[in-house]
Image (cartoon, rainbow, N blue to C red; front, side, top):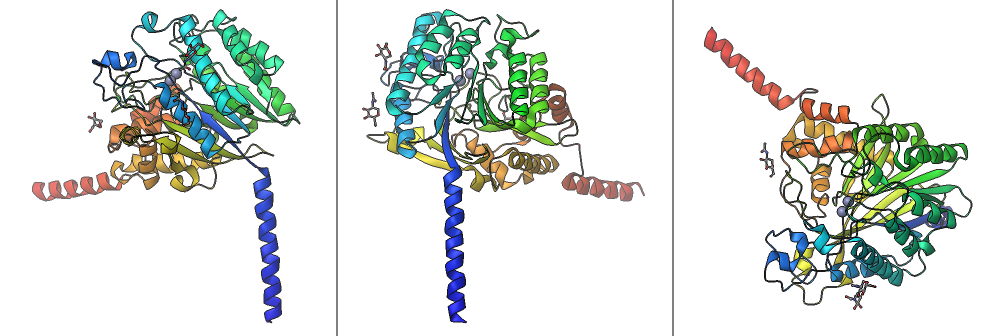
Length: 478
Ligand SMILES: *[C@@H]1O[C@H](CO)[C@@H](O)[C@H](O)[C@H]1NC(C)=O
Ligand SMILES: *[C@@H]1O[C@H](CO)[C@@H](O)[C@H](O)[C@H]1NC(C)=O
Ligand SMILES: *[C@@H]1O[C@H](CO)[C@@H](O)[C@H](O)[C@H]1NC(C)=O
Ligand SMILES: [Zn+2]
Ligand SMILES: [Zn+2]
């Protein structure tokens, strides 16, 4: 008897080791970083807010060595973020970098210009290359990687050529040519050509870009995206899509809905994602500076794709109206994925508690701490589309039925949304803006979500009150 038990134990041990081994063999990692926004004029000892940093727009500052919640990043902050990445995971398979390198400023011509923006992109590239000399980077162009900001014309420009040259050793020859021409490109993610990465230039679809007008297909990008996805589908490839400006709405602008894409482009992008959802394993975007995600659905409302937005390195407080607080702690995100299938297993998000770090005498890469692990916080088995769909539905159903009874996952989501900077509770308006932006990318569906919020389904609290008032009236009248 005892002998047999020992045998079973040994077999179980061997089996466990085999499973663990198989699992670790096909698990890879990659970083996703975004929105560094270097403010080269930042100085801790400025006498006025504009002297501390022009990115303050004159708002009250509280400057420290690693930055200020109303300013874009000082060099020290960007430097520490890169060394923190190296300390946490020095050997990722690759790094996704979704743009926005220059500062926000009300006076573009004074503080920026074609050469300054190119210099800033060059500075951050040089740092990343110094810290990760042997790692492949996949950059995507942000709306602040241009001068004047967002005004990126189709058909190439001196600035696009400059960036293509700065990034040349990261890009294949085809990707280099494509980027130089239109700011988008694609590459194989693996030597066997089973996996493809598509880097979009979604600035052509951004309604702040006035050199395009929201009709037609600037730079032929939609046609190219469709063709690329169609070819991936025919060749049984899996795809990661990266980009800067996302479709859909900004979850934090709670005065009135704020969307980024021209309406026709928002529709067209969603329709392409719907058609090719099965080949898309992940979409990675930035621009919001917040930590959020987006669900894409088919005609019957089933979740078919998702998009993950990584928070910014800059803590800069947005100037968009209707945003409560609107700063974030600097953050960086490390993914775990299955290298054979591109299936997304998990991510860990690291952040710098800026307020705390500014009080440390020698804050550096060691000041960056784990903020959360996605599967743990959200109680999901992985970070695939199915999991985000389930989480989004649970949060929306519960919050919508009773705003005082949102699930604990939503409370955590709300905290992570600003990389643990804003700890204010999220009231009903805040919940509605958050959850409509997460669950509806289509303009009409989003508007319906806003209009009908709380009216769908049975609300037990409201119903009990209604019944009580009804009974009271009955007795008063009788
Ligand atoms: C960047 O960070 C590294 C690691 O902490 C440090 O050795 C180096 O001095 C920093 N450079 C600057 C310019 O802050
Ligand atoms: C950025 O690049 C410019 C031009 O190469 C250089 O003069 C400057 O010192 C760099 N700044 C930083 C912070 O590395
Ligand atoms: C919800 O919270 C925001 C931000 O804290 C506040 O401005 C707004 O007035 C609140 N709305 C309601 C209905 O309480
Ligand atoms: Zn940005
Ligand atoms: Zn942006």
